[in-house]
Length: 485
Image 1 (cartoon, rainbow, N blue to C red):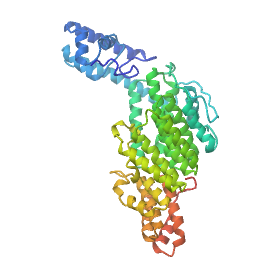
Image 2: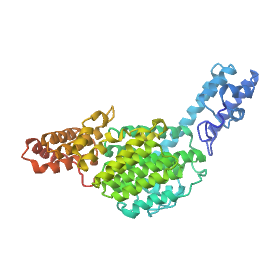
Image 3: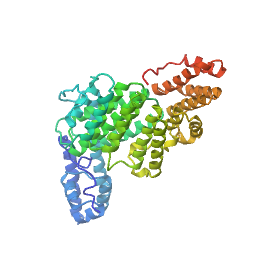
Image 4: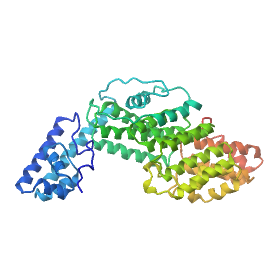
């Protein structure tokens, strides 16, 4: 099968707007050498295309220097024309030159020395649902200018979701200002997003936020200052959406709710402009998760409904199961026992139909709904302490095989709440101590600290118990705050 349509023209095998002349010359020289050796070896373009899996037109573009193609192509070409490694070496020289150019761009962007045009910001909660609106929100993040004041509540919050539902698809045009951006740089950013997700599994939001915020700013500067083909610009919009979603989660975990919403809003716009409907669903689910903890239960349910509706046709059983799980969480926090049960049953049924290979990459963390620590806590919140403990006691099903330290803190805090509900004070306090031991490992999670502090506050009425008194006294010496949880 021909590979002509496999790689979009924004990737490293293509010439892009405003590329430095020396890179264009290197690519043309490589293509000319291929054409010369191919003719000398009496190999036709059609035969080379067939052997390499590309179309004849792709071979023509490669020989003209308009496309670079991939290393497999050049290995095949080198063998067919008996170049003895010459073509492959020249190809690697071109790739090295492209990466050196992009490294220079990276340095300039990170140091803020790359040229740019001023971009006006907009203080409205809702701005235009297009590239200009995304740029406006992103510019505010890059300069620390607030996009809006205070935490969004009530209609302000749900209107954001409704606007997303109604927004028209966006056509992405090529921008031709600044240095041309190739695929290698976007590949690095994609890999970085995945690395940061894995880091988040083991650190608290405060630490992750310190790591991800510089990358958000870098990606935003890249968007404002680089030139792209439409496909590569769309790809960058998606990357910005994933980075700002992760930054929003980290800010939420660190108790910075206003900042979290600023990041989430930008992520929702980036998801829309990039055409990634599932990413938009994920962002709304995170806004709903946060809203529940801010006692905005109705708003949380409305956001989840918007996510279901907006993701019709693309939501997988796994994604729908996650939305149901967060709905059950909202009901448990509101004390709605029957609604909690019904939503959790739906989450479990859909999880049973889940095929992991169909799910988006960001859903890798989602495990059996009943065994999520948040869901186990839900049983305690609706008065089913024994059932909550039954799930929490199976720790292997609550945390990953390589457990997240932050999730273990939450696990012990929730277990403490459940045992307190059954009147088992010693065991409740013991779980509190274990949580504090993990917090002592410099896990920067205001949310996790808040849950441990809440447990200790509930135990204060039982300080005649030695274990309880020890936990309360110990907590008083630990720095942290749960006031914004």
